[in-house]
Image (cartoon, rainbow, N blue to C red; front, side, top):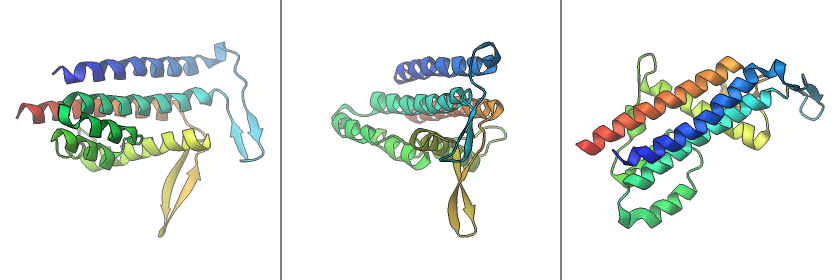
Length: 192
């Protein structure tokens, strides 16, 4: 389906940058990057080479967001393009509900609700996507890696001391699988 050629191409192009960031991180000992410093404001040790991993998360979520936007733009009816254009302007958080809502303009009902693969049931897909998007938001808006956790009846922010290479690679791999799964579901839906 032609609608996916542009989306897939954009996604792959950005993911090449992610691969490069990870490769640089893996070989950081060959490059002069300071080991780290202590930030007295946040009381967090800052590892400058970790910037590469945070950037990889930001680029990965951005690639996924652009992928979704490209598909929507290609598949939506021409009469709705102005309305879609305005909606896409507010589509800056590619979480489950937002993805399902935006696909309705293309007459595709809740494609993310159908995404799953071996070892990753749908509820885990949506949960993990939400965690990765939240992580990107915390990195971009607060310049650190955080996550929200439920503490009794309250939700609180927990600052992770370090973003690991392994964690980053798993998130990148997850988004890659999600793109393939979503594409398969949307193609099947459009063919029926």
